[in-house]
Amino acid sequence: MFNRIFRSTKRWISNNSQNALEEAYQKALAIKKIEEEHFNNQKIDPKNCNYGDRVYDYFEGELKSNLQIINIKLNQFKTSKSVHNFLDNNVNNKGNKDIDYQKELVLERLNVIDTIIDKYNNNYYEASLTIPTVENNEKKFSKSSSIKPKNNSENNIEPNLETVSDKTSVLPRSFLRTLDRIKQEIDPKAGDIEQDVINKFRKSRYKTAISVKFLLVLIIVPLLVHNLSKIALGKIFIDPYFAKNEQIVFINQDLEEEALTELRTFEETLRLKSLIGLTSHLSLEEEEEKIKEKALEIANNYRSESSNAVKNIFADLLSFSAFAIILVMSKREISIFKSFIDETIYGLSDSAKAFLIILFTDIFVGFHSPHGWEIILESIARHFGLPENRDFNFLFIATFPVILDTVLKYWIFRYLNRISPSAVATYKNMNES
Image 1 (cartoon, rainbow, N blue to C red):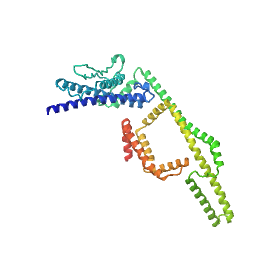
Image 2: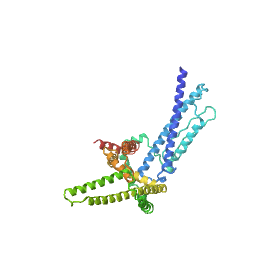
Image 3: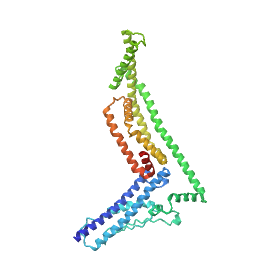
Image 4: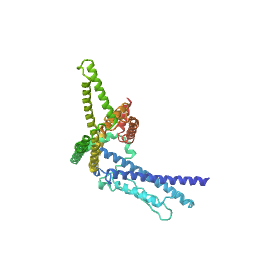
């Protein structure tokens, strides 16, 4: 029984060590992913991105959090592995190799971790972690993750990693930030600070100009392509085709039913005015002639509407192609525009954020939203000359707003709750009142 308890304890310590190393490895990969997606595969630094201060503060917070976890997990790995090696050295348990690490796997994990956190040894990370040996009395490898900053007196760099004691200061953090701001304002080197403010303003102005221009291009170019292609295709192909085939009046049954309803209404209105004396009495031949003229007018209108629907299909395809080409050729502008949108949205006050969220949800996923979605679907079908499908409309209205509401709630919980928790609290209060 003692041997069983001992083996279980050893297995638990081994699994704990392995899990700690794996968590540290995953956090290192998370830092690497941020570098690849947002900092051009370079160090997480304001010099390597075009984001504003608030967006960069978010990434810096993610970096600090991941480095803290890496520090904790590597210490846990060191402790667990030391205990495991001690038990192996004192107990003859060589036959059991289930809990041994593969040396290559451990080395691979440690190399990835060191490659990532070595970039931030001066700014964020201060720890001396010696990874214990994996094999006993044989080829030992001692992987040191000691990431020690250089002399701060020489580099004027202090670790920015915020510990729990930093967060729970005696004085409120806002008060400390105010003192720091006053200190900067009375600093003799205030000229450098003024130059930094000017540079930030120039950068922000440049980013705003690029974003506005890019937004205008995204709107104007597709619209121009749509209108020009619609005119060109209509004159060259579609209008001549409908002129040669005069029997083509309606491209779907819904248009035909609308035309019949309109003609029937005209006929009944004409007879009513004649009966009540609003117009002179018409003979059957005169009445038939007026109805025929109206029928030809209705036919011409619906033939024009049918040809216009066909034009819209080709024009929208070309317009979408132009839009896609702009996106493919404007990766830099997209990155700047995304940063501009992030700064604009996250720079709003908490009440403004809550107001926009409530407005969006009430319009698109609220109680009255099905009526709006029904109008949108009918307009799209008419734009492309498609017959209205009530079953599809009801299915879409029953599923898409629900999906949209779920995505919005996930965004609030996953991102907004972490970036601006006060805005989430304000949104809940406004939504409940």
